Length: 325
Image (tube, rainbow, N blue to C red; front, side, top):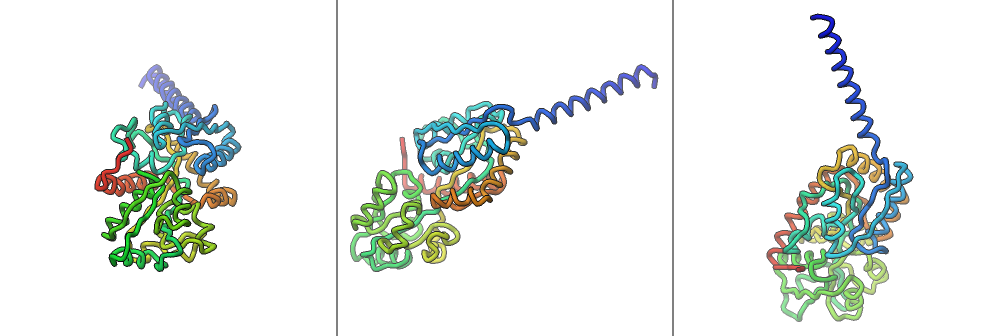
């Protein structure tokens, strides 16, 4: 080899090394400007409150401001769509729920985005549902309640927080799993359903457990079952549906996602730091305030959850012909 060729080869190697270093440096520079964290629900709710804690702690840890941007509407689709269509540079993320991430694609005939348009980052938490009955009902667990409903002695109505909510979907799953002649009664939210339950207008309600905890604890209503895989720590005496031989697993969960194609170093950084927040006393206390169980895990764990939940609720939504538009 002549000297000219060797010099050119060395120059090429040096250029490649410098380019590689520059690329690595560019990847590790995120974030170099404020990050928008879209919350597709109104300010003041549980998702918003948790997002603000996470945004504050990420700002402190990563040295750039994480700004919570509330973009409510269409069951969370409007704000989530903004993220799905955003530049996948890591500067637009979302803290959203199982509706926009899994269920809504089957509830709405027209969706502005597809599940594949979102990149899973980390599960933040999940709130199990409870099936609670009026204290006038003799049944003290779900198995006995279903037996009463099947006995033909009276009508058994179960309220839920509204058409297409996770409480409604869980009711439909319960009805199909048990083949009990249950009557569904939709309300406009958890609180109206709870009010009518206490007033004995319905025999039971299935809804996220948060609003029901104090009433179960003081005996004004009876917790028949929680729909999580394990008993809920806030109501340890309420058995799971699975314990009672009824295959019912349902929760509302919330997670951080980004647009498809967001750089892996962004995904890994947010995943790592949010897991730290969730393991902290402050993070756990904030979630428990809203009746939520701590999430965490890898992006792949969240991706599997999104896929599994989509398949499960697709069957129920289509069988019950539930539509929101």
